[in-house]
Image (cartoon, rainbow, N blue to C red; front, top):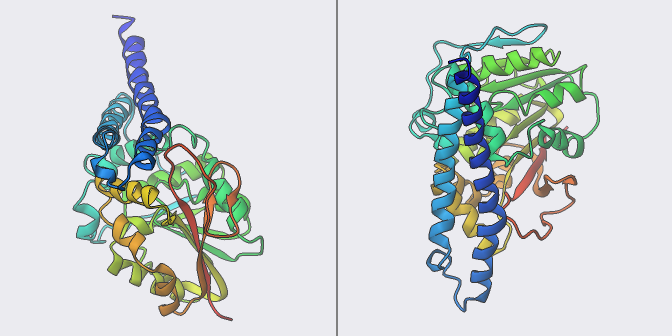
Length: 342
């Protein structure tokens, strides 16, 4: 019996390692094969190519395996989120009504979503690392965004919309310690986890449970409104409201920086990305990528709204909407930039 616990831990880790290896082979072996078949075909009927059913099945199947392995790992430990320590705070809104578009779909195929309880938030935290194929274990991706896409200036207040468990928020507080940094998310458990992890890092960030389209913060009180992987998870109608709220929050001269996905102009690449929306339970991704977000920003009163590409391997923000050629599956990261007129 003494060896049961270590054996269980080894088995759980083996499950995680297997899923991670499977996802890597899907990205660096199956995807390039699909691309070769597409380039050799006379017609670009991607869904009809021999490898496509395997590509699609492996992505969704591996995602389901991932969550099963992650849930087993989390349930083996303490599934309660401790209270935040230090200067980090979490403010919950027990009366907040979660939108149906948010609760009605298991986004990322995570069973039950990220909002139900402490365990759901902890599962999301661990799963988010594996989704990026083990390349973001120390959240360097998010630091790269802050380091390369955020102008260096004095910010009084920075607001991170859709902050999740805080991984996109902490680098802002670390980079701009004198700024008030606020992370906002619909999920109460994620807000509590974000504050707890910020406290562990010695970061005095503030986390608030609220809807990004109705934050409740004072108008004109923010110098930087940001988000990471938020806009592709919202219906297009809500995106219009999101830009209106961002414009309301920004002080004159304040800036907006949203990190998300955008079309590349490569028919094969864009098809694979759009289909990712259905394979990974992200129904709002295809409409978002077809929408004109810079025009939405302009209608909300922001100026100079435009997309630029982002290379997560180290370059970060690029100067234009063009990505380096890469053989493996990767997300078409891009930064939407805009500002509030002075």
